[in-house]
Length: 382
Image (cartoon, rainbow, N blue to C red; front, side, top):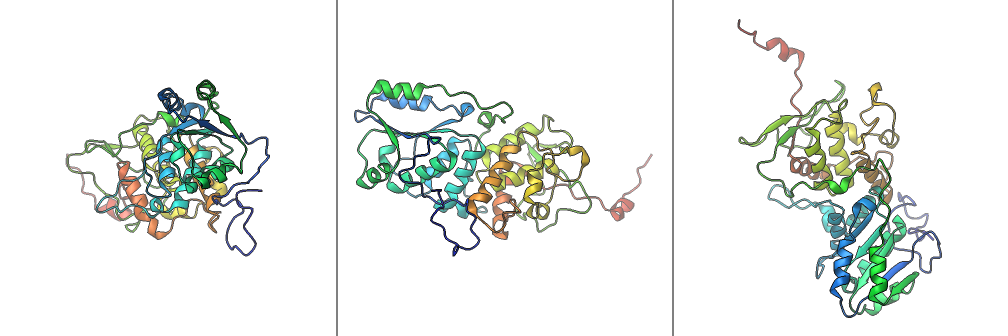
């Protein structure tokens, strides 16, 4: 059974890989690690300290301490994304909270997409005895979808509903502090070479007022250009006292030092996978929104040489690959009809991408100089 085995042909426009918060009761897949329950009724401080110290993103192991008295079904998903280094946008007067933040399944889809794209293999959840059955359902579904090793650190009794859920999956009980410490202190191998070190990205959040601003590069081709209607909320000019630096023609230079802070902000400040991938491609290529809306799935996964100049996503640099992979994973989890255009966003999400771009301190590209404007340019005086 797969996480979507209950879907029927009468369910239209839903891909078989689409996310649903269900799992396989009684699963016997030997490749899926059993759930581990650390039972610590005496609440030994050393166990919590060790669990928090076991957080090692460079090896794919994440420790999360859930928000106490979680108010909504999406809160634990948000906690996980923050543990992955992704921060949700801060609501402001001009930038309301994105709709997906308030939607439980959308939040968990985003979390599942990041989990697979970032190579997370082991998830440790502290104070798990406080979680309601709905949270446990999503954790079990995430475990099965991402093939996770899931460890729940419990200091009290589960509710009857949670106990019933846990009885449906293979699990190991660790009842002694020594066994729990051995489990938590086990050192996993580091992630494979070539994986972008996203765990090292730690710019301030929210953005500081004195941060440097960068202008997005112009489109690479005269066939596509930015229009006034594109992301109307993006600033065309930085604040009067801000420092503005130009970006290099990033299609040809992925190592320019000016790129480093912009790359870090995209990884850290954009929690929505598709929005992060869009902003990354705007930065890399200058591609306007309409071009990304119609970008085919196969082109996003292309790895051909960028020297051909045939498509803006050819030869993605290492820092952009996990963002593109997360966007592709989210497309499958959504099961949308736009599966062949994974970076498509509806009109009502444009303000959210505007907020993401502004949060990364990026500006609209400089207006292209037309031949008529060039002819009107005054001659230089000698």
